[in-house]
Length: 260
Image (cartoon, rainbow, N blue to C red):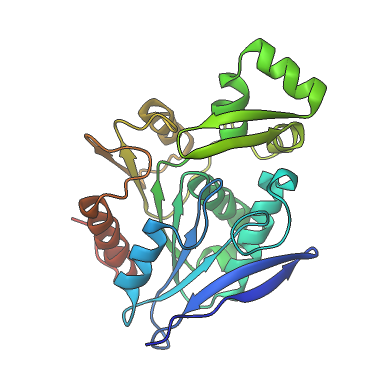
């Protein structure tokens, strides 16, 4: 079977690249939301594509400033990336399992909250969220509050800060990213997701510490959340056994089964 070719969706003048892998009509679809500085052809996304081929449809995309989409990374904001996720979700049809990694987990939660508030009929199409180290409120809790006073002052004065990364070149964190991010915070605003939320969290994750993810449970009342902590797991959770477990849980939700 030929690999799907990128298609492009216009979102407020931004050219957003998507990959759509089709399956039989009426089957549950999967929607992949990548992480910060990641893209739609990452290890986990590719593993889901291989696993779902012939079983489920799969939609992937790159945020603006990422991968094959237009724009520069430095111009990105949580709001822009959320709008893009909403636009891509709106292009899907039928029931969906939404899978988000790191920032993608945060965007998945914001997308669900937005749909529940403004588009309840569309929200009903989401069967479950599967989140991998969800970096909720990342711009405030994992960036701004983690910066030293000197780094905060430099970011305000210069408009950007180069944050070292364990995964390659430093990330450019802009003042705009931090300030716009404050309009999308979840802290202090609990909401009942009303559907299953399965979270994977590596206990050796330094980018999104386990304590940060445990705090998220307080913001998602209703008894719908399962937190699966993985001893020895890092932030990426891309080891073969991690990928197999991710695919198993996604398949269970897509097939209306309770994950084991």
